[in-house]
Amino acid sequence: VQLVESGGGLVQHGGSLSLSCAASGRTFSRSAMGWFRQASGKEREFVATINWSGTGSYYGDSVKGRFTISRDNAKNTVYLQMTSLKPEDTAVYFCAADVQEWRTPVRGDEYWYWGQGIQVTVSS
Image (cartoon, rainbow, N blue to C red; front, side, top):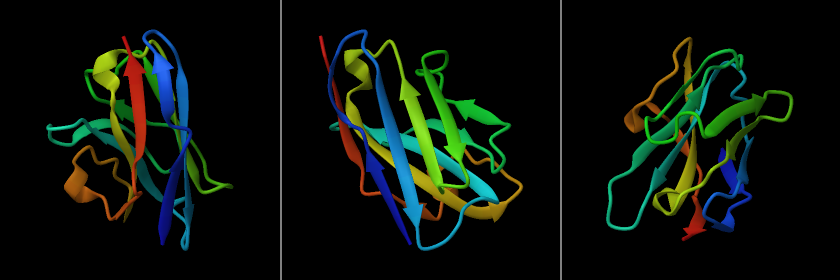
């Protein structure tokens, strides 16, 4: 199983960026997928999660109202649309996939598979 993130890079304060995470090796159409991030020297932080059908999502307090998570089960892909970016959003962003059905976890230890991470840098 592989989760591969794409779309990261450098963006100015106030700008927007879109991340994608494509899964291969198994389908996650019946389980939640999420995004986490880790800034240099800090602990991993929950960013967003979306349920299996795409009808329910949760966000970390620091990104609420600015980030939007979505998914396309036909493509086995989850997305993170980030707007109004701030320098404090600078981090390595990881996508994660659960295998248990009927839940939408916000804790990292509830996810089974992880991507390798992608750098997002927001300049001030």
